[in-house]
Length: 194
Image 1 (tube, helix red, strand yellow):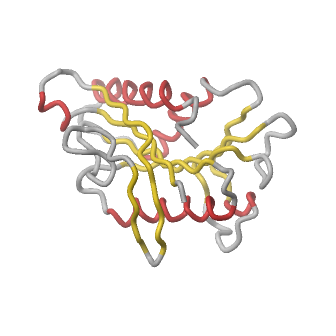
Image 2: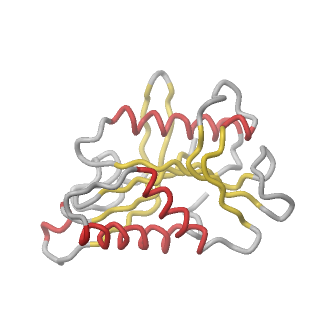
């Protein structure tokens, strides 16, 4: 799968929203739930007619065993028959996570492994990890020193080997100086490809 049709404008919008919020509250870092809520609105605004966005969906709703209490942040379904997610109508799933240079890598890798489980269960589902950061470059496992996508990488975590591909990196900054790469607002989309 390539980058989803809804990703570019939604990610740019999120970057601008993060900058806008910073202008009001410069000492406050927004929690993941607030970011998920805003990203939901932005993705929903760019979905095609029959596609529906559902948040906080249990893995078990998709028929994935052994993850009964775990939830997916966002699920995009083909809503032509029903808007309720099930194993047959899910197009994409998205996990959302804050990421900076100091973020615990294990929390990021845990989410990637969960998306890998979905991909192994149903290879037709697009499995995405939306990573954002506020006024700093995200961790080097996703972006280069220049703030660009690292491309395709493989990792092993808790005995699971998976491959991910950074599909889209969007950033908003207040200056064109070279140092801006380390103080921009970032939103990026990572696909778990296997």
